[in-house]
Image (cartoon, rainbow, N blue to C red; front, side):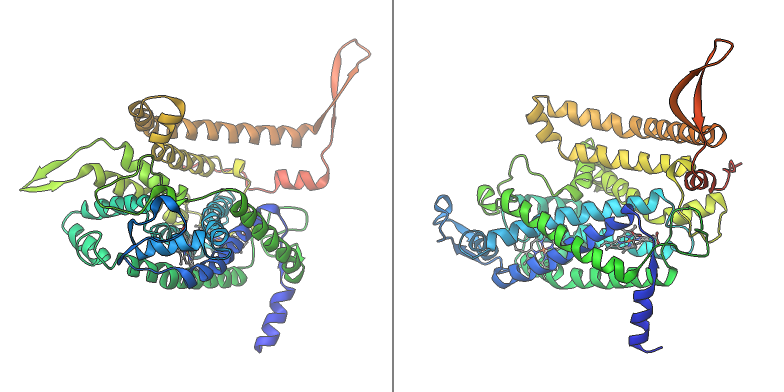
Length: 463
Ligand code: HEM
Ligand code: HEM
């Protein structure tokens, strides 16, 4: 078939319609906003660490020595037409992008859409998440302000803590001693060229695999493992175009009314200064949080210091993400289920998977709270040590509780489903019987609902 024939066939493809299948669109469209605003910013941004004297219109910084990168960010914000709007739209879009990627990941996880034959697509998606985070990290380090410099000190410290190769890693990344002179040029090449190209390639492969495997669907009358019930792609395309404008409109409205990353308030980066209340963007917050709550342990072995207070959080954070990336393979191994699946699971019908997912999320969210320990302390007037200790204890105590509660809830919901299938829906209408007793009228479920509640395989407990 020629290209024309292929694209016509693709447009006739059927895609199931469900709101949760649209989360990816927020990710894709915020990425498009990132590309458009990013290209605009690169027209005016100078990725250079050369010192220069600031002469722009922001009076408090006039006459200060700043890097050319910081100087150009200030010019984008104050003198370039549309510059501040574009900068803020770029930054807001980055926050929305990663939130949408995570939301899409959760929909795929909790519905079991990662099972055979889609494991490879899960891995591609997982890399999209990791490269997306790296793209955000290299992005907010570009403006050369005190906050981004403080973030880079953390990055450098983390690299240095890696045994044996840490010093080399740091010197490769920064081109010599931190911060060196190459940082801006390197991070800009990574951020503007390399990583966007990698994200685009991963996206193309992700979507090509999706077309190849066809989309999963919820169980329902007429829906089987072998078909797809839904709307043709061209109908989706029209809806999706509208959705693009909605996503772009929301991001630009946020950019227009809500300030983000006011670098002029932080001032330029200076190695001898650290900003207080410094926060990374939210998607790096969990990793930062693990670093913040780790006790300051160090051991010296054969004359070498092992910086456990950085190494342990580094390993824990990496492990947290690796487990997520490898989950489809772990589940297939444990359950021994290697069949292909095209019908989605309702989360309640997979209590263990659902409970593992919520337990993972609880670790992630607690680490995120740890990353905001200083802000929570100042906002709520509590000691920063109490917040840190609460997170330390929480990281061990909360996940098992979340696991147990979720599993019990899922089993409870299953029981309610069973009740509804056997006895019908409670109508709330009470009637009096001839013998004086009272009873509630139960209505049989409609066939669609009955199908949904009974379509899944009966659970088979693992040995
Ligand atoms: C997933 C994709 C991307 C993410 C998550 C991302 C994230 C960010 C973030 C958070 C900043 C800091 C903005 C600020 O407050 O000043 C930034 C800056 C920047 N980004 Fe991106 N970006 C992405 C893609 C791109 C692309 C595709 C380009 C160019 C083609 C680009 C070009 C730039 C430039 C030139 C800056 C520095 C300008 C400035 O900070 O004022 N970005 N990026
Ligand atoms: C830029 C980020 C991403 C974009 C634009 C994207 C896009 C898409 C699209 C369009 C679909 C089909 C619609 C849907 O199922 O919702 C899809 C499905 C899928 N995605 Fe992503 N994705 C991204 C990131 C991820 C991540 C982080 C993961 C997981 C780690 C992932 C795993 C999957 C899987 C396994 C499927 C197949 C699900 C199915 O057929 O039901 N994706 N993705």
